[in-house]
Amino acid sequence: MIRVLLADDHALFRQGLRSLLESEGMRVIGEAANGREAIRYAADTHPDVILMDIQMPELDGVKATQSILEIDPQAKVIMITMYRQDRYVFEAVKAGARGYILKDADAATLLDAIGRVAGGEALLDPEMAQNVLDDFRDKREVLPSEKHADLNERETTILKLLAQGFSNQDIAMRLDISEKTVRNRLSEIFNKLQLNNRTQAALYALREGIANLEQS
Image (tube, rainbow, N blue to C red; front, side, top):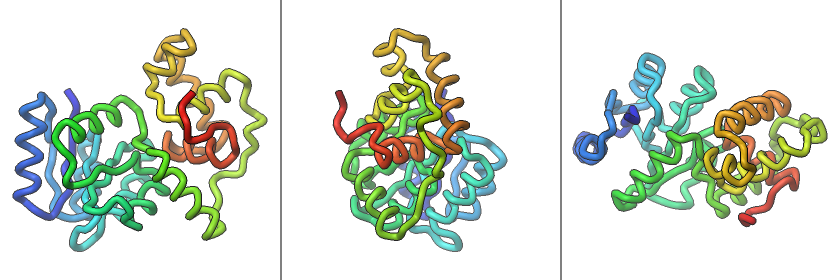
């Protein structure tokens, strides 16, 4: 059962999400009406997935996400936004959010996104990845600068597949190894490159030319 935290300042929207998720066998373990509540709930309950609205009172979704990921770098946050090109989404993804979903998305898309993120994937579509990379470049910001030469051939392959959007299960099948081995290798990759999560690893791989935006 996937445990989900809902963070949105509109009670009716939260109620609709709760009804949908619980009808699909998921468990809503908390509802937050602002960013500060979201941080507190996340620290107390450690949900599998956090659905985080961008615009909320007291503390917005981006700042709340940044605080949550500082406390728990492995937290899995999906940003909820009205607009695909929302600047705040870029900042949240740069901080480590797993991706975003539009408020007008259909139920199937939302459920698929939650399932994928709960399973360890990042919702990093090519357009978003390129925009975030461009933003790093334009602001002269950098991801950790550890050289990827420290990675062996198998680790480089796994990182490439991760950056191209493959789940742990897909990577395991393509490389004929177990999902546990994939998880262990990813932990080693993160440690070597001083990265915190899949989103940062995908961006790093794209920036360093380890992967491109097309699956192969």
